[in-house]
Image (cartoon, rainbow, N blue to C red; front, side, top):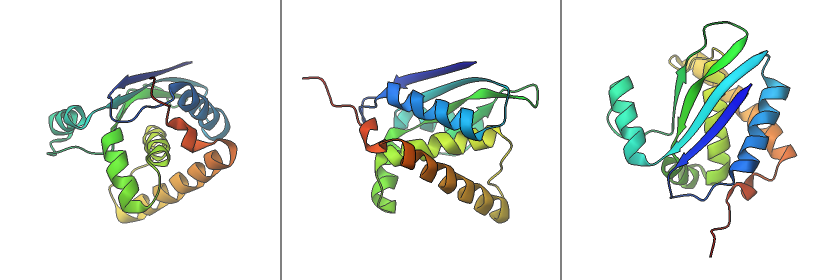
Length: 153
């Protein structure tokens, strides 16, 4: 089982150890997969915009992009790109914290790897309900606000 976190942005100081603990909890308690090989990339808006355009042919930054690399049903394998800059903007819009948005994006990516789809309205509503449920579970167990690592002086 592999879980890597790569932080290539400087907008939000993220406590990667806590984020890893949250992800391990979500994977162990809520995803019925025997094995996983996952890499989460925290990237700046420019990088996610390039990935968004190159692979999905959409212009501009987005919140999360998931690449499924699984070859078997019993595995979660893939890469999930998350943009904290977008999380900050969307948190203001949705009256929540950017830390909560980051966890939501990670859950969203994992749900995609599990087979959820958000292209049609009905499946998007189902996925959103599952996202909300899992985010609430995480919020009960972890102090999500502590994902904001205190900058070094």
